[in-house]
Image 1 (cartoon, rainbow, N blue to C red):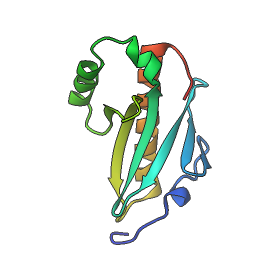
Image 2: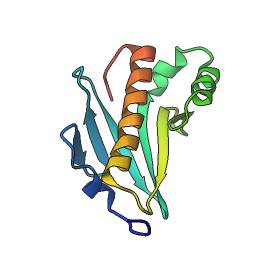
Image 3: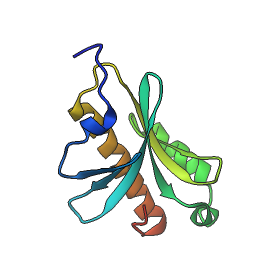
Length: 127
């Protein structure tokens, strides 16, 4: 399959995923869920998920240091604060040779890490 490119929506055929426009809602076994967004880049897909909103971040001290510490121990999902002040989880995957299983693993990892960090920071399930 190397050299072929699949459209990302076609890669999301799974019971725990629901596609709506540019988003994928991922449902977990514990009844929590998290929504990720897919950005179609030239040679890759960027998968992002909001962890929490700017107002919640204002109450968390040393956020940049905490995100850096999480990034240091993560090999797939990274964290950053965007230009609007939202804390995001993100990962990317190349398009060439991408299989449904590989894409779903990236989507689930971003959703899982974003949801875990959201719960740790806020105790909510807003995203």
